[in-house]
Length: 274
Image (cartoon, rainbow, N blue to C red; front, side, top):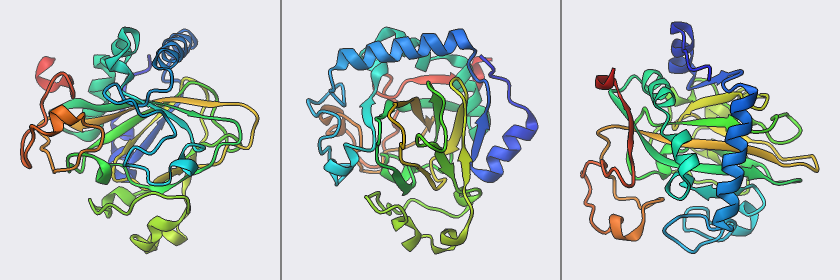
């Protein structure tokens, strides 16, 4: 694993809100990740969340247009909770340190992982933000996005709006079928040029949860598989939103509670561990 970050890379992430890393995993690691995740996804039999019988593509209260989003990608959340091999991948301290260094926080917890499989001819993902959907408000929340297959302009690569993380906020502009709806909230970006993340299998990107980003349509007869994990800075507090929290845990929370439940949001790295 290529887990060393230079000062220049960290500075680029801090400014632009994203960082693309080539050759993050070596070929053997790519195969290990792909085989482990494929098995974990198959074992879930389409069940989107560990705590719910909702199937991927069905309405989950987060994405309102279930039919459209069911053709954007197959989304299986928190595989680490149901598969030990994926848990070992997601708990890798080296990745946790990378996220902590990029976010410049004391520690990083898993918010949720998710396998994203864009099927052949899959719909695009409209421009959106991540953090406004989540159950905490923190400007340094972020995600890693690992390519398990080559990601191209043709099969639905990610696109990032540089420096958008500097001006966006926690207002939830939503995400729907229309690619440009977010520009009603952030009109200056309607005329900006995005950066395409065209990467090989084993490469990855990190992006801030307040960076405007999107993904293209899959114009091929092949899948585009990725594994992602969203990270919450240690010490983040509950904002009242349910998002991916299971009902029993959600009912115990009140606004302002620290989200430090190790069974739901495990700490995978803290700077005091070194």
